[in-house]
Length: 168
Image 1 (cartoon, rainbow, N blue to C red):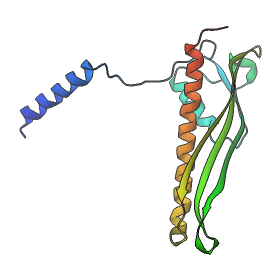
Image 2: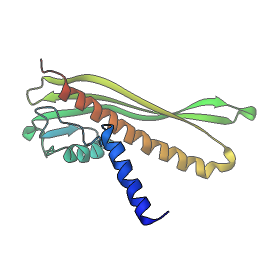
Image 3: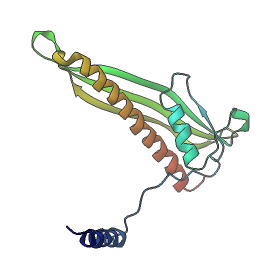
């Protein structure tokens, strides 16, 4: 295909995509009052730092102390667990489920709720083959990382929903 034909094809695709209303999602809008958030989470939290970075990209300025905050994001009961789903012949484990739970609450500086407490839960199932035990642990860790990314998106959607809902 010639350069001219490729260029025309690229322009045609841009017009088609632009004409259908497609646009990039962008960052989640922040609710009013969440410009200076304090994230309250345990020291072992897997999601606190990624959430801090995502809020910064969305225009917030995370603060160093709760006294400086315009709002508090409380991440409570964060728990990543693994459970057996099925056992095969010879009493060998065949499937696992990794479950990630988190309670999210957003309050303003005075303690009034901006977002009612919500329990979020995500899970992923995976097959275990004892012949590939070394690879199975790597797969499990990748699934845990994927769960953290997905939980971050769920938290941001809930925070964004607070931005779209009318204030009480």
